[in-house]
Image 1: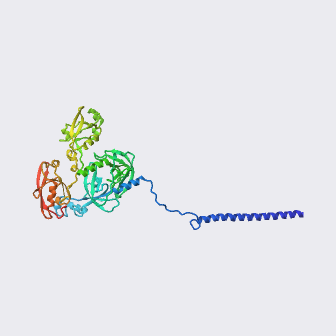
Image 2 (image 1 turned 90 degrees about the vertical axis):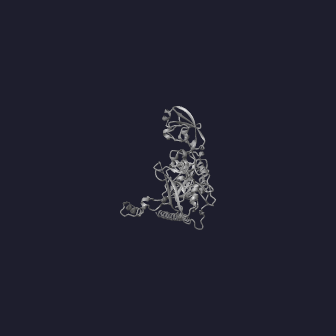
Image 3 (image 1 turned 60 degrees about the horizontal axis):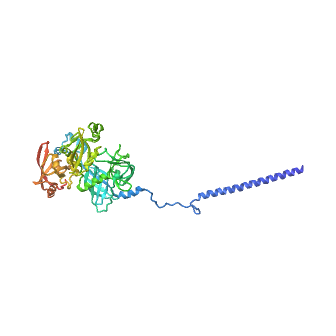
Length: 524
């Protein structure tokens, strides 16, 4: 019994010792694990402080991205300019109202009091607009759109990266293609852009449009050529490159550029339901721009040939109509201008022109373009159907503005006052035989008034558009040069008398004498 008690006590002591050892071991392991975790946490908190091995990040030197657009932009953008135009709009009143005294009981006077501070004419207003252009010659010649500078009384050009503005003059315009050439004079070495051959452009090619949309100078957008030879959205001689590069108001006149850095178009128009970009823009091809530019800098205008036939594209190329007239293809003539080359060649309304110089005529352009591009005075060979019989004739090409004077706008595309600035608010041009016929003064000598500026000395004297000045102070005027010479010799305060011929009521010729004293500012 005593031995059993001793064994039990020994067993209990051993268990107690083992328990103590186990507890001690557990505490040691716990301390070690806590130290490791604590060390890791401390290392994490100590990042960036002295003693760490981490490397700080640095901003590297810039590396040029592989971007062909940037090279093109750097090549062309310096030659792209911003064009700001101003057109002074005068509120005009009749001479009768100007001569009447103030009448508080006049109902019209009440209207003027309400809306114009009592002034029937109101203050002059300036209409300002913005566009773009591209320098194509170091002498300062710039290509742009006619609608950018049309009717402008002041044109100012801002070069890329330059805050100065340079006054530009109009070299010439072409309303049929909506192109214009202007020029600035500066001693700076001007950058230029090279015009390429737009005939080589393919649908799907990348292009860049550069310009000043909404006045934001040197804006570049990218897109592709969406279509070529797009017609039916502008004038007869406009065939466009279509692009989805963003073109907005202010882009007009700026270049459309291919990835070789050549200008392949002049941005001209957009189709949109609002005033902004919707992915449908149009540029006049560079091949057209080159032809127009060369004619303008050479002769100040664009000459196109014509034989004097008129037609409506859709009706004149209708297959059913052509079949009924016995023609497999062609263009049906609707009318022939009186006295035109076509009339002299024997053509009549109802004839179907089937070829020009041996080339088939299947569209209106097939008929118009080769004649328009022919030299004035040259002959074209025409094949035509009449009464189901094929016939041939030759016609002599004449200047289109002579054949169709009523559709020419400004005769031969010339600008008013092309010979110099307006004196007395008068813009005059040469009185050609055709102009004489148009205003009913055939066989007369003088210069024709093409514009009378509002609130000018000329308007006060009673001049009107279409008047013919035949004498100044009893000196015959036979040309613009005679006119300039006569007015340049006058001083402020001198008496001046104009002999004026004016057609009235269709068949009456009036001879008027308009007189006054030369104002201090001869431009007014």
